[in-house]
Image (tube, protein in one colour):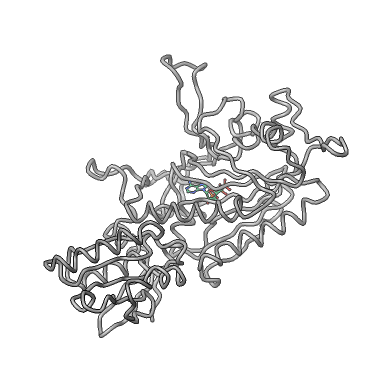
Length: 433
Ligand code: ATP
């Protein structure tokens, strides 16, 4: 078996099989903007659901939130984004390409020359105007992170849920950054989705909570089938940390273009709540309802990207194998992530009884299992298509099925085929999924 990490192959499969399309392609496309096709949409939804289940529904100490993308501009003053959320950009004087200063060495990555303009800060927030008049008073921003929606709702969540420390708030949503150099497919885009947690703890418990979240978040990727050799933790050096942060560790994936960040886990101390307290003149302190003690909690922030996680799961699932001297491309997604769990395929699409039985099986299974019916090609081709989207089982209905009430179930990974009675099929699949 060969495992390849060729990015071009992944991009081509994603287009061919309906995972990811270029945005506005019929108009020539919009650079670094991507749309998720039918299978990509299912996969991304599965990634988000797996995260939400692990960090909210399966825990006692977490609640969810869904804050709006547009927020009061003062939010970004308080958070520091208005003044400091900038990358330093430089232009190559020879080829005129523009780069993030921290992404170029001493030579231009495009033309190899060493003549750059002076670095200047470039704010990454996407500006917009609210309402009919486009003036300074109507300026607002598309949020550059979901986290601030959590901080500004800290008091609302406390008042409505009566939580005691430690507890956390989780959110999934779109964020926007006017990146200077987007690229590497869906890895760095200007519109993307984040999955973020703010976990509030007593200051003296911040360090153990930080360490726990690093290992829990790392484990989450492994539990969803990511290969350990492609995953690593990288602790930030002191000089990489924001001035208020007491620690930060990234979880990185070994993409075809190199080790890159999937998620960062930071100990942000009490910086954010205190900043919002200052700018809003609201107290924003935690008051223990048993001891009446008041304090500013510290916060641990595991912050990941939905698109980056999805891309890593795609890269990790990609396999090429030689079968009968032909290359079989198969996406070995974890059952929880596979966009489609079962495909029901009639061996002869002109035989009405076979088609009717296949459709009946599909309508029964779909009540609980995500499945598709496909009769648009010969069986060999249908299997190949399903392998390429990572469908875990193919159920084939043939002439024999009409007589003995059995169907052929083919396993994606082993390609083994088994005859199973239609009456036992649901149970059989459910057990294995
Ligand atoms: P980078 O250094 O790669 O720009 P960052 O450290 O600025 O990332 P954070 O601000 O920590 O990123 O954002 C948290 C997470 O959001 C990242 O780990 C990543 O998964 C995701 N993310 C951030 N920026 C982008 C982007 N432009 N495109 C896609 N995902 C992003």
